[in-house]
Image 1 (tube, rainbow, N blue to C red):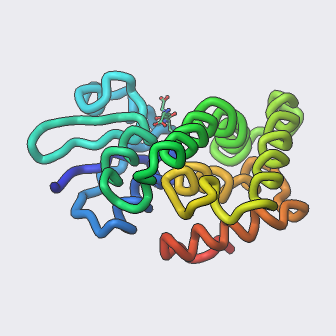
Image 2 (image 1 turned 60 degrees about the vertical axis):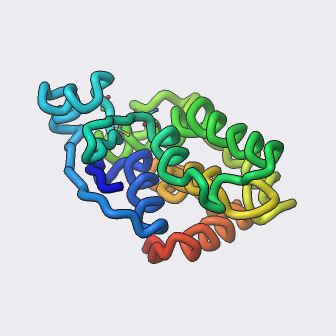
Image 3 (image 1 turned 90 degrees about the vertical axis):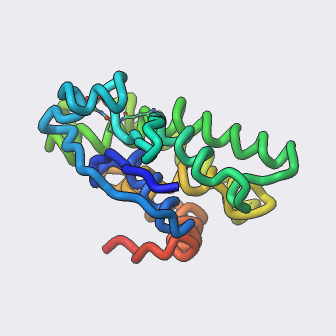
Length: 198
Ligand SMILES: N[C@@H](CCC(=O)N[C@@H](CS)C(=O)NCC(=O)O)C(=O)O
């Protein structure tokens, strides 16, 4: 299975796919799509994903797939990153859906305004900080009791959630009070072979 990943290298949603594909040793090409330059809305890319968002993948047989977590699930099917036991698998889905509905729209969006658009804090919706801290508090509580989001072991839930948590400081979130989150990020980086961020 060879495929092309269309992604922006600064995007956590896209990096999830890269990290997983590298971890699994899959054969793929990376095509850079610069979101800030509007390339995700260009006609050439809309033919790959009509929703005009990265990441998207195109398999060499012509099939195309979008939505980062759907891509993760497809690529990792049959591996230990997707628990075989139904309840553990459902717990992994629980975290994947929570990541997209509650985590990414807050942590990633604040990072986008601050890090991509260089906005001062005064111009960023203050509710993003409040909601982001609640997200981090919840993660910290979970990780104070277990090493991984699905207690049985490292799974796609950890890869999806680390994507923007790892860059939370770029969104103005101070991770220093979150010792369990920081230790978990280090564990996930070790699993994925990622160098720690400076
Ligand atoms: N739920 C989607 C979100 C994808 C998404 O928001 N992509 C952003 C980059 S992180 C994008 O392509 N934005 C371009 C735009 O909206 O024009 C996923 O998980 O793949």
